[in-house]
Image (cartoon, rainbow, N blue to C red):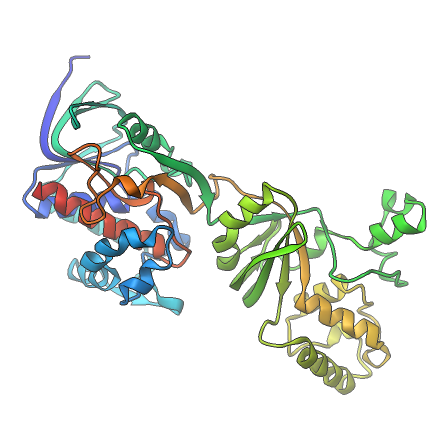
Length: 458
């Protein structure tokens, strides 16, 4: 194919949030801009966020507090001071997109449609003269003397620009186009890449769940649960071990249930490493929800070194003594009822059924006949449900990438490379990531804005 050469002031590689923001900002700065995207449409991953509703930002006016939420957050301070969450909010409302603030500062479009965000950005890029190279995959960069000379596409076209902005994302959700190729380019151009790891991913729990107390045989409870080969175990010690473990199906009983405020203690080889408080979601494979996602990267590192167990406190606002008092009063009021009909003020029906299963207490037993020891087991289960972690999902389920192009090699005030004079980086490709709740998209908007402005200016 005959080579065709196209010349621009700024070439942006990647049509995600950081890339679209960089292209629009550079065009509004007077630059001739092209945005190169290998997919057939912009914002593929953006359209998937928040279940399609698009949690596009986290409103936090204090930029220092905002930066504290991120890995390498200090690097983001100049970007947040120029284009933080408040500036972002005004910017999009000026574009004609109505926004709303929900629980914990999360920002959504009023329409609850991610497509409105992508559609507006695409429209504004067109209005400002941005050129689109869609379904255009980059082959490589040609560089020399500390500058990129041109961009070579796989179809033979060449893009020559004064400045280049790489905003291709990391490796999370590869089906969206984030293949990690940007890290290869960065290394070829002389940059250091901190090892990419999946972050904000759900946990798979082991096939058996170990209660937080020494088990004992309870007539009618264990016999109905253990079948087949499980009954063939011989010896008292082996029986105590097999009876002290519950199948994954015991957690599956409450799949789909979300608990808004629990505390998760993360234990590595029996020692507490750290804890997290927040919302969790029980699933068919294990655990998800914001609290689980936010600890996934750190807990996954611990898992590589040995056994990891989550100790989940289902009622962190109650100490064991207070919880025991509540159970005593509840059982006294419902003395003639089965345990399965008690604890209504603490949990829903499915959750209390699971708690009784894990506590190895017969749910058909009358509340009046519950012994002190059995009551303490229920308390122990509520305050310390032990869940051995089998694994975490990989990049295919990761919301973001932990790791990326080293921030030490990038000017935080401009997003310009300290190695290649006309190269800029923005978005998830950087070694910067934050928790769930719109933080990671805000980082993309901010760094994209700064990269686009400075690429046009220089």
